[in-house]
Image (cartoon, rainbow, N blue to C red; front, top):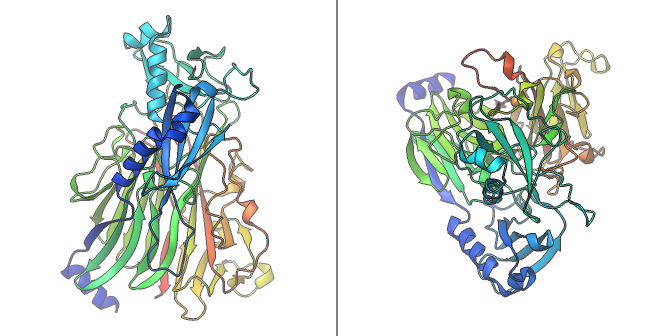
Length: 549
Ligand SMILES: [Cu+2]
């Protein structure tokens, strides 16, 4: 077998086929137009200032029995009514706009690029800041967090106030983060030059901001079916979503990066779904505070190739990101796919305020999957301070079938309770620390077929309890029973809270011969000022590899 595989490798290159799937982007655009002009919505906003912030398909509950997911028929739109400082949640059918329901909400959704632009237009009229922006002494940039608590708070709840960073260009301006209250159309400034929990001082660290467009955090349809083959042998088959198509009702709270579904290797199911639903960052005391990030706002990477489906580019050479080039510039929003040696690589770049994230999946011809997450930033004051990034992958393993999966753990030296055995099975839900001293790793096995994948921690993935920000990271590995409503912890990116609440899923359920989900947290301590020349962040992640297949 090994010899044959090697011979195949020499003979033929990997072939990648990408076919558009799921919703057409036009269906979303059409529904957006219908919502804004609908009489019910118009009646609510009464010609006051308002804006459509987002429109997302309502995803149907996962059906593991179905061969392919069904296309959603309904949407939820969020319209912001500035006159009354409230959000309107508009639900309806994607096909026709006849029956809409409108609910109001005091929740402040994440701002869009359009709102950020509107905030900059208001800043231009500010007598002190306007001329400095006009003269390019100050460069506006999207900071963290994206919304600030406004001081205008007569109604006892925050008014919609967009955070705008103003970075000095050269040594002619003074760094500041301001709020722009879109309800009162007023600039909010802070004594410390920045809202609580962040910094805007003279020191800036990170890569210069390229001011390029992003997918804005709004839903952009982009799904595809990917087949990787060599000769007549299909090695990989899976469904993939671009990051901009991963946030919405039934999908996830903040997006999940590049999401893989129904991943089959050599005709057998490995994973039902694999993604990064939780991402956060915590600063050392005296730096900045903590943030919950989002994983659906695509930023530009550099990719040369053919656009094979909306949001998917099949590349002739490896795509490059900010981690490779140290440049915030790019030419493509979406998922770049390319072959590198024996691996097919899927990669996207994402933005959350000043953070830059890289999401990558590397699928080897031998069945190995390397999920990767990278961390970088454009210029700001917070990242001059040491901080800790945490990415939490959710691996919904369905080895062969959804059920009949078992999880065992390896320790060498063995655990006293299991001596002399190096392997032991986990019967109930549990949170497990990584333990490189014992070379700890896990196997997910189908108890009937004995097909098996191993989850091997990455050497740079950190240990939650050893980090100086413990207990913020909460843990390393969670072995859980599958539940369709446990896709993420439901905490919106605007926070608080910021820490991952996976403990909510941990209630002692049996996991033996069940449908098992493994959450894997990687912890990366980022010291931007200590990065040697040519290093622009770092990338982490575990290895998933077939043992018996
Ligand atoms: Cu960082």
